[in-house]
Image (cartoon, rainbow, N blue to C red):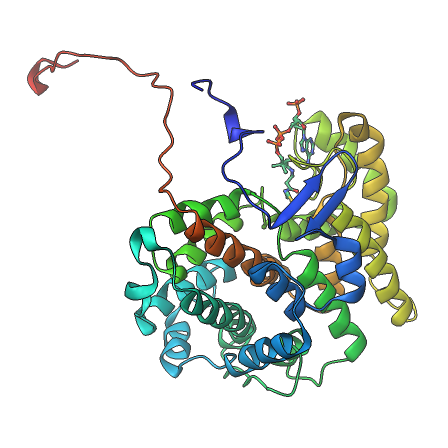
Amino acid sequence: MNEYVPGLEGVPATKSNISFIDGEKGILSYRGYPIEVLAERSTFEETALLLLDGNLPARPMLKAFDQDMRENRRVKFRIRELMRQMSPNGHPMDMLQSMMACLAMYYPDADGFVGGDHGADLDYVHNTSVRIIAHMTTMVAMWEHIRNGYDPIEPRTDLTHAENFLWMLTGKEPDRYIARIMDICLILHAEHTINASTFAVLVAGSTLASPYSVIASGIATLSGPLHGGANQAVVKMLHEIGTPEKADAYIEAQLKAKKKIWGFGHREYSVKDPRAVILEHLMHKFAAYKEHKVGPLFAIAQAVEKAATDRLGAKGIYPNVDFYSGVLYAEMGIVPDQFPSLFAMSRVAGWLAHWKEQLGQNRIFRPTQVYTGEMQRDYIPLERRV
Ligand code: COA
C-alpha cells in the first residue's frame, strides 16, 4: 500500500488484544470487559494487572501485585534531589518526562531484558512495570510540593493507590469517597487502543529502548493539547467563559473563528465518549457528596456541552474524556497544569501493556513515505547563489 493517509487514520499499526473501541456505538472495553463494568466494580490496581496480564487476577495474584505497588512507591533520594533542581515554573509533564527518562540512570538493568528474537524476560517486564506505575504517581504528587518550595510528603503503604496519591498530593488524610472517585478516574484513563502516545510507546519499544525511555516517549506525546493536554485547556476555556449564560455566544464565536472547542471530538468516536458519560455522572455524584457546594465550572461545562453539541453533533463531534475530567479534578482542588500528569499516571498502565505486547511480537517500526521533494539538483557554489 503506497497511499498516504494523513494522521494514519484507519491504518492498523499493530495487532492487539488489549482494548477495543466501537466509536459508533460508544463502546470501550479493556481485555473484553466494558469500561462501565470496570468503573463500577474494579480498582485501578486490578485494572492495571488486567491490562498487563490479560485476565482478571485471582485474589493471591492481586494481593501480591498490590503489595509490590505499595513497596515501589518510594523513589531514591537522588531522584528527589534532581527534581529539586528543576525549574518550578516548567510544565509538570516536562518534569515527568525528564524524570521518567532519568530513572533509567538509576535502574540500568535493561540490558538483559530482551534476548533479541527470543523475546522478553517476563519477570523483568512485570517488575519494571510495577516500579514505573508506582513511581510515576509518587513523582506527580512530589512535584506539587517541590515546585512550591516544600519537602515532598512520604508515601504510605497502608493506603490504596488512589488514596496514597491524594495523601501525597494534599498531605491530608484521604476521604474514602473522593479517593474512590479518583480511583475510577484512573481506571477510565488507563488504556485506549492505539492513540498517539501509545503509538509512540510502540515505536520506541520496537527499538528495544529501555522501558523508562519508552514511557518517557509516551509522556512526551501525551503532553500536547490535542491529546492529554486537552483537560487543562478545557478548564481554561470554562474559566474564560465565566458563566453558563455566556456559553452559547462563546461557542458560536469560537466556531465562527474556526477554533477548536477543547474536550470535544475524537478520531474514534462519532458519539459521546463513554468515558465522558461516566465522568459526567461522577461529577454529579461528587456534587451531591459535597451537598452541591461546588464552583461554577460544572454548570458552565454543561452549558458548553449543549451549545457545542447543538452545533457539532451533526458532524459526530461530542465531548471526549477530557471534557469533564478537568472539571472533576479542579473541584478536588487539583491545579490545572497537573491534569495531564494525572492522565499520564493512569495511561502508563496501558502503555506498559502495549510495550509488553510489542516485545512479544516485535519487529522494529520502519514505515515508508511518499517523497515529494526533487530527485536530483545541481550543487551551486555559495558565491553563485542568489
Ligand atoms: N471543535 C470544533 N471542531 C472540531 C473539533 C473541536 N473540538 N474537533 C474536530 N472538529 C472538526 C474539525 O474542525 C474538522 O472540521 P472540517 O472537516 O470542517 O475541517 C473536523 O471536525 C475533523 O477534525 P480533525 O481535527 O481533522 O479530526 P481528527 O480526528 O484529526 O482530530 C481531535 C481529533 C481529538 C484531535 C480533534 O477532535 C480535536 O482537536 N479536539 C480538541 C482537542 C481535544 O479535546 N483533544 C482530546 C482528545 S481525547
